[in-house]
Length: 300
Image (cartoon, rainbow, N blue to C red):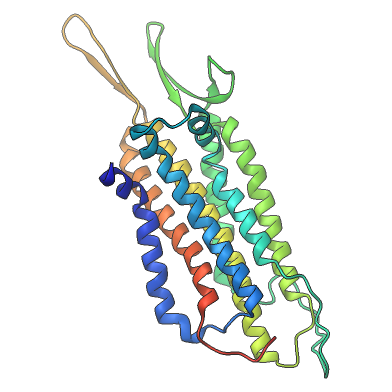
């Protein structure tokens, strides 16, 4: 069980280590967040790590212990949307506290908008990743058919001829439509988060205030990207299982073997799923670690 658990948790372990190494390099160049903001930021980062770890532990636990069927079914139904739900919770925490600045002296009243404190690379990454998720979602959904037992569009069938077919589950419309709604909510909340961070007038300590808002905006985009990455990893892992479907039908001479048209992509799906999960965990962990910066600022 230990080896299986370690394999399952490998992206979480490796991703966390990578985030720590990056934090050790960058910590002195990152402004210290106000105490309340730092606490909320740490909590937001832990949400993603805990959710992903729990999702990955269900499998080994179910194989070695008497896990209730309700939990196993819950995992099967919500494993794709859970990372996105974690992203919504994380963004809700990162948006806090909601407050207007009321300091003495002169404040900067220049108008600021959605991208005032965002780096273009982060915005491009979110947009590109969203487009990739949509492409994979539509392709998998189009390949899905109603499950004979439930009627849900979560079944993949290959006609083998002579009234013979083989089939298995797939990330079809039954799973992807709720996920698309969650992705839309995630992107909307990320944009709202960035506006809430940017809108209050800059404090008189403009440089420090700007640095803090840049970090908070980066964290919002990192949580969004991390949630999308972990969702994509779950989808790719599921597609790897679907693509590995095969059958052997005996004939008079020898058994005839059949594979899916995607069989050659199984190693790619598996590798990309691991990479996506590792990147997603790294981003979530980096958000939590940003609460421990050592650089002092004078902003409140």
